[in-house]
Image (tube, rainbow, N blue to C red; front, side, top):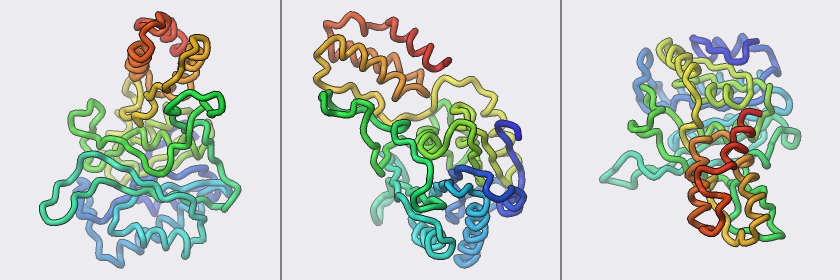
Length: 314
């Protein structure tokens, strides 16, 4: 297959065409049944019809997963418990994590509390035999200690990424576009380069953009031809870094007082945490310069930028 494939069609119909056990990872943001306007279709089914729709596509998702495959499903509060039950009780998938995506701005309410999070369910096909690359998604430590694993810490199950505000240069004409940083973390954690990643509700193309930039094969399905066209245009755009980042990735550890250790750590930090975020490197280095002002080696511009260019190109 081509590295990236876009398919315009009904998700359930198109999923049935994918051979058994050929997809290592599914990462998808399906309709939440909240009456969103998706152009040529309305996200407004009766309660039972929505659950039946979910049951059908999730059943196909399980079928196409490899035996060591993983599925991440975004879902709103109203239906997430039902989706959980379908995945675990009806389909027999193995629950791994309930991830909360926390964002600082959202819908304002005057009667009740304003929502500030979405949730992501992570299920695996096998309870123990599945891909998970913790080293690829770690976040920087707060302080340098010789006993610390300076490769970084587990990011935990609460992820803070800003919404895709309309002022974001990568904002597309899609009502529920998600930040690339979310998909980056899931795709890096639960697949290898060359693996096939599937998004049955590809929307604005976020999953496929991340696959494209991380060496994965991608399949994206959407019923709206305008979204498929949008995705294809997006895949042709110049890449300067993913459109969102966990701010902890730019965190500069305290107590890097030994110059040799500091210089080596800075190189490692760029390679470990900012590989897909070249637009964040200069800010990180400037932060290091302010924190350790007597170290001329981290002034901007710096030879470390050349090192970063070698990392991202090789």
